Length: 230
Image 1 (cartoon, helix red, strand yellow):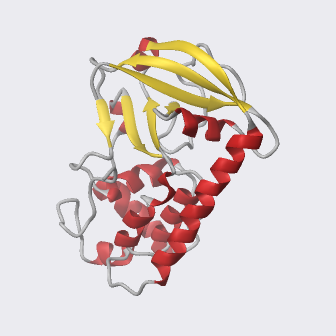
Image 2 (cartoon, rainbow, N blue to C red):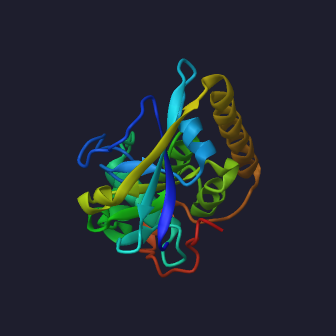
């Protein structure tokens, strides 16, 4: 990622100057300003079934930024989920699920606060459910990797540092109508869930999280899927 890029942020309001340090700490990658390079996706994220929203457009000069791209081939799907479980709140009702969280953070965790910008999948709606199923030993890591590609549910770009915020320039804001974009969002999610059920119905061998823990499997193991963007 080099040079000036266009980013979009879906919201229920116009945000001409995003504030560093604001937001929810339990988002996917912790505190930050969550954007996408897809205007259509930003409009989907901006609306709910009850309200319209806005698509805020920005430009960001990335030339001097330290970027963590979790979809790069040097990282595995377990790096993404390790970051996710460290920040999002999951129901970990069993000792196995709690061990899974600890193992992932210890062996695949990354300090996202050391970067200006993070690129990775958005764990909204279906993605969150897929990650929870993996943590609870219900699906294999191969099934998780397949699920992450379903429905094209969205890649996000997150500004993490005060320096990155200082380089963000507001361009414009356009309306996002719930009657159009909530329907698109729901259709995308429904299609992903339909395809996910097809994955579950296939009888395939694979690595569950408990297999990974028992085998002390690390990020260099070729059985762990890489490069989520492909």
